[in-house]
Amino acid sequence: MNIDLTDTTSSQINAALVRARRSTGTPAIGMVLTFVIVTDEGSHYDALRAAREASKEHPSRILVVIKRPGRSPRDRAMARLDAEVRAGGETGSGETVLLRLHGELAHHAHSAVLPLLLPDAPVVVWWPEDAPEDPHEDLLGQLSARRITDAAATEDPVGTLAQRARTYTPGDTDLAWTRITGWRSVLAAALDQKHSEITSAVVEGEAYNPSSELLALWLADRLGVPVERTVSEGPGLTAVRLETADGTICLDRADGSLAELAMPGQPDRHVALHRRNTAELIAEELRRLDPDEAYASAVKFGVSKLGKAVIEPGGGTASPNGAEAAEASEPAAPGGPAAQANAADRAGRERAT
Image (cartoon, rainbow, N blue to C red; front, side, top):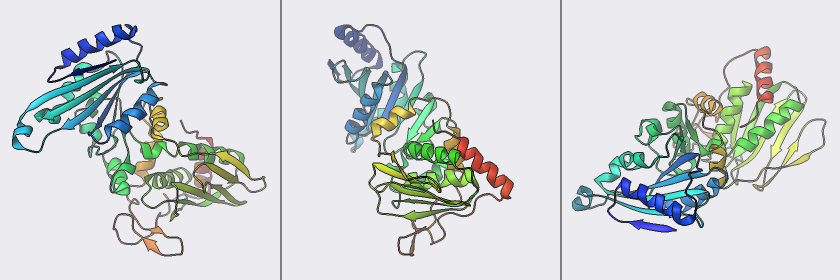
């Protein structure tokens, strides 16, 4: 059921939600959170489709905030709220409200969203593109328990990660981090099986890939060893190699779907490690509403290293964001063999959430 409201108010939208629930025969509210998507007219369709898929696992009220400030002085001076209420059918397990904020109202989105939040339910805000520099300082971000951004959707992904590190507040996360959950799980499981001192690591992936940077930073942070970033043709992350005293542990995914794990003294094995779509990533993020401490540690560890040169296939160097050529990753925090072994053991015990 769709209800279109023009030049409306939040109270009228709430009344329309009640009518929609009654019309679809679901008067009870069984939603567990409010999911707010802040986007524009051109990007809202894909974002909403991903949110609907995720709502099958996490029933939620989805509020899509579409800002339309206008270009002419007359349009910018006006303040109008248009809404589209959707319930039942293809809306997933919950309700959907599209909010189009015109003119001056586009700069006060929180005032339109606040009356529509589910009572006593957590709020999660997602910026598919054009996230604020400090999501927590954004007025919508202040309403939420979790704030989701995506560095891969920006013009300077590596620079964006550095910005995320500077402004990190518990509750922040980024889909570039979510994309490496499978990689972290497989690598941690491999280290559980192979208790050997790790001396260095290499992370291979596409240039300008923030997930490759985050995985390299996570390894450097947890293992306390130098981590080299090398560039491949992709897709996405393609390989991780851990040099140990017994040989090389290699996790290679050349086709973006099936990976091969090679470990010293063991037969090679295949691991399902496909590139997940946005709906799967959002569903994973909605499974936890507490701060992601592993993400915080990784992104903060690499603030001084992000944006430095990476080694091209063939030996040349290139800088992802225009900085002078330098090494992709520097040695991690100093520590003797005992400290290194303890760090490696911590990585082996860790499991991605």
